[in-house]
Length: 102
Image (cartoon, rainbow, N blue to C red; front, side):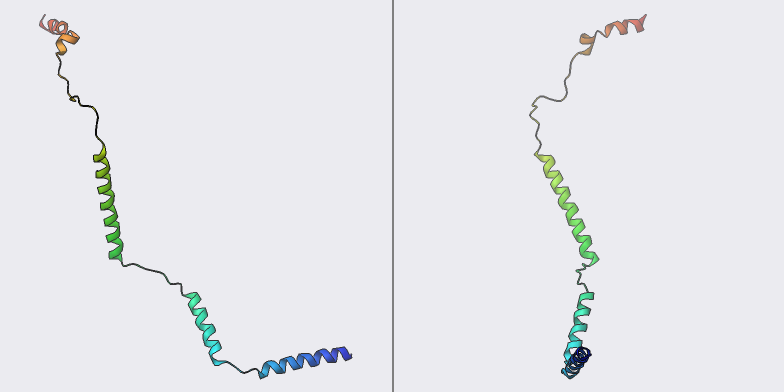
């Protein structure tokens, strides 16, 4: 029983010390400010005009890069692309022409 009384006295003494602690009026303000700051996440928002300009510029850069890449290719073939030959002599089309004349 004496031990319970001793524990009760320590609890009462602790409560009394807590009640006597001086109140800091700025503490609640700082806590609320920290909570508000945590809730507000700072995000960077660009204007729609800037977004449109960035997309347009990137498309122009992609187009120029594609054209420049296409111009880098050079064929090593120096021969002309068109070859003119006498097909009548090679394929003997004369036979078919004779059949039409009969």
